[in-house]
Length: 122
Image (cartoon, rainbow, N blue to C red; front, side, top):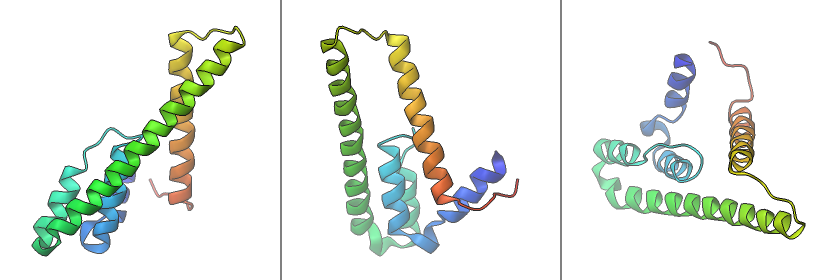
């Protein structure tokens, strides 16, 4: 697991990718992964102070779009719940949790396989 994390951090190295890294980190931190994007913004600005405003704006855009995706996912789930309830079927809280966890792991695993298509050396 540690090798995978180091590989991911190396792939997202700020000096190499800069603002695109800030965008991705800000977007992902507002959606599926509980992480903060502030260290990425700070790191980029520390390396290149002239990118202060571009970094802040890109992080704001990425985090806002990520929040919109999260809202859309929640609205879709609410719509599905209303359809199930209209049919007279009820879902318990433990079942909602299982559906959410299933979707999370499905999306995250598919995304990681798309980002890292070749085998990782562990």
